[in-house]
Image (tube, rainbow, N blue to C red; front, side, top):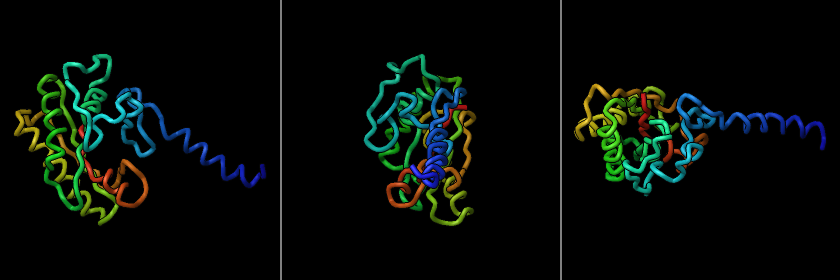
Length: 180
């Protein structure tokens, strides 16, 4: 292998090694963007988007951290372009979150609002806040005490998936519930 190829390969290997750093506090793996990777927490395919497999909260593994339990039932909901109203698909996930919170009265959440890369920083921060607030209102309407739910907007600053294009943007327009 030529030395010039090694110079190209070394940074790629370093990035790959850093992409799955374990976050022991949360008990889940954070991907390179700082978001939780549910697959590493043993919850692949569950609660990560539309068509998630329903999980009975009575069967949750008590060996999992509260954040991992929340991820297994669905810790995020997605939004369409420039929208912040909770969709019909999102209500199924939020109903599971509400049931989880009712069965765990000592747990509180921070709801993170996110946007895709399009639009100005200011616009996306405001849109992310409206998304987080919509999720919070839904959970309050489902019987969760308002004092247990905080919101924050990250706008386009913390994408779940790096890059551009419709598939990437679809994953980045979201609200994520994080156990405090």
